[in-house]
Amino acid sequence: MSPTITAFKQSPDRGRGLARDMRVRWALEEVGQAYEVRLVSFSEMKEPAHRALHPFGQIPTYEEGDLVLFESGSIILHIAEHHAGLLPADAHARARAITWMFAALNTVEPPILELTNARLLEGDKPWSTDRLPLVQDRVRHRLGELSTRLGRTDWLDGAFSAGDLLMVAVLLRLRASGILDEYPNLSAYVARGEARPAYKRAFAAQLAVFTGHPPAG
Ligand code: GTB
Image (tube, rainbow, N blue to C red; front, side):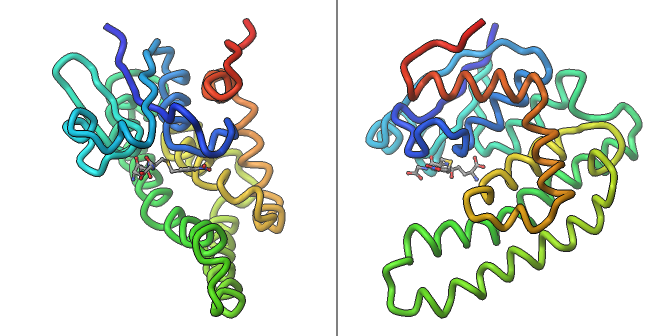
């Protein structure tokens, strides 16, 4: 039976692939697992039926038989553990790939989210112009470290893994800021992720929700 995920009925990013259903779709495409999507409105997300799946009233969720999951990282780890293609077989390499999943979510994503909030939610506050450079520099600090570690390699630790999938998904949210362009190896890393056929299929599927046109092919 195919799992069902939830996604925005009206994506605020107009199908740019920035909402977190995108990373789950990408993981499912990488492993070749077909899936269903249930679209939910902002008000439906806060209703008891959806909160039974997601205590915080958000997307994405993941339902597979009796199993219900929320949190994109946990969903992707579940997918990666039950299908080949997103985690290496070697125990140590697998543990390192999972470490990169946590690094993407716990170490790199928070300052990026802070920047998004500073721009979108706090941009009109009188203190915003003083604070924004501080928030931007925290992002640059993390990206500098990540850039140094990635160096000239294609992926973070050997072959593409769920760690790269999450890291690319997290970095993509920075593109509009221009900050990613300051780190050419990270820009190229993100572009490698976006060039993957599984990414393209996932992107087309989430865009189709916004445009109302089914993806070509
Ligand atoms: N930690 C959770 C996870 O990783 O799954 C976070 C889930 C989350 O933040 N979900 C957001 C949500 O449901 C959608 S992805 N928000 C509605 C709410 O909280 O009421 C965040 C998001 C939203 C919009 C854009 N955008 O328009 O660009 C990008 C990302």
